[in-house]
Each structure stands twice: as C-alpha cells, then as structure tokens.
Length: 296
Image 1 (cartoon, rainbow, N blue to C red):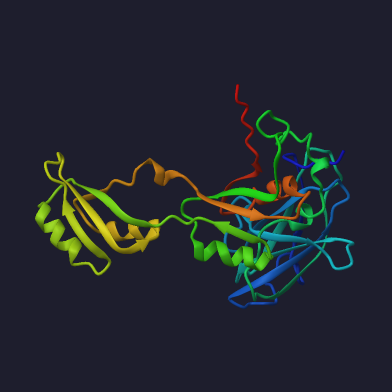
Image 2 (image 1 turned 90 degrees about the vertical axis):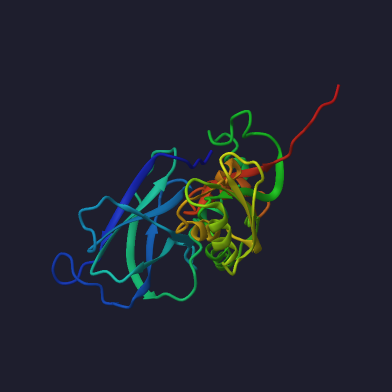
C-alpha cells in the first residue's frame, strides 16, 4: 500500500558559481526556477522551501511551486517564481508516512516568468488512485471515509483571498474551479464617536454609497450603509478604515472562508485533496461527501 502524509524528508541545492555562493545569472525582476529532482520513495506530496541572499539568516520559507513529472517521466520538475535575488538555496520537502530515501536534486535552471504558476503537486494528484489512500489516517475516520461525489473536491479559501488572485492560478493549471466570492451590498455601522448626521453626510458624499440611514431609537446609535453596487469584503473594509467614529458590524458570518468546488479526474479525488491542502490560499480541502439520511 502506497501512502502519503505528514512525515518529512528533504534535499537541498545551492546555486553555485566560482566560489561558494555567487549571483544568479538571470537578474530580471521576476523569473522562474525549475528544480529537477528524483524521489525513490513511494508517491508523496512535494513542496519547496527556500533561503535567499535577501534574508540568509531567516528560517526556510515556503515557496508556492508547481510539481509535475518531466516529459520523459524520469524525474519531477518543481517550477516556482521568485523575485530578483543574489543567490537562492532550495529544499524539496516530502510529505509521506513511509520512511524513504532522501529526495535527490538533479539540477536547477532559470527562465523568464510568463504565465501564473498553479502551485500544486499535480504529479502526485494525478498518479495516486483513491484505493491507495483509503487507509490513510486523513480519510479513515468515521467522518472522512464515507461515500463522496466523483470528480469533485470541496475547498475553502482564506477570507483574504481574492477572485483576481485565485482564478488565474487555476486557469494556468487547467483545473476547473467554481467558487463563491461573497460581496457586500449593505452593512450596519455603530457610531462610537462624533455626530450621527455628520457621519451620514460624509457617507452619502462617497461615490460608492447609495444611502446612509440612521436606525431609529438605536442605542448605541447605528447607521445602515447601502452601497451603490455590491463590493468585495476587502474593498468594504478599506472603505471604512479611515472613517473615525464608525465601527462596521461585520458579523460572525464574515469569518468563514470563501467556498469553492474543484473538478478533478474521477478516481483521484483523495490525492487531489492532499495536494490542494498545500495550495497557499486554501484553508481546507475535502471530498464532496454524499449525505445519507435514514428515516424511521
């Protein structure tokens, strides 16, 4: 049984030229690194960590990378984008339950950045079938081992993720995404200082506010702000940020992640869950469970 999960083995490479650490040849503002490596162990999710000349003393930082099999199928290729640096040191981290020989890096190449990178280990996601993961601890619990819809993975994005950031990444990966990005049309504001009428006048003087109406007999005083057109939560927060004396009442529902659905190859849903969980903007990934109800 092949498994993949949490234990870690690593390998690293340093870009070397002449002396110990030397400047990279490509000094463009942004470029792609392509790290070729082999992994003699069982299939696992791979992620990339890096140190650079900009912060040589800091801990290893996670770098979003796309991992695919090479065209000849003999090794893996991790593609990642980084800004201009003098030198870079990389580690390929292996997430697996089995003890395995270390990852071996064959070389690093650079080329100019062109399109967005889909930062997922698709080599793992598209090669490990569900029957190889049914006994994985991640899916063997009473709630994780039930039936699920084929070809679908439910995901939740962090609340600060934006549609403009997310969609191009999935399009670059050729993976279909359906996501709901909540927008704000109306919000209640508590008046913590200042005159209510002056706040109303200031709000209605904005080009994005349709109306600002005081709530009658409210204690403390409140104002209902209606936007001319629905706006993203981030834009609403930025709008209220400079307004002293007003505290928007976002409500607990605003703490939830953005919900989405990723359409993946049938029979590989569990591997895609493990791979998507390392997507930087994703808060969770789950098989789309089928709920069964028994009536007496």
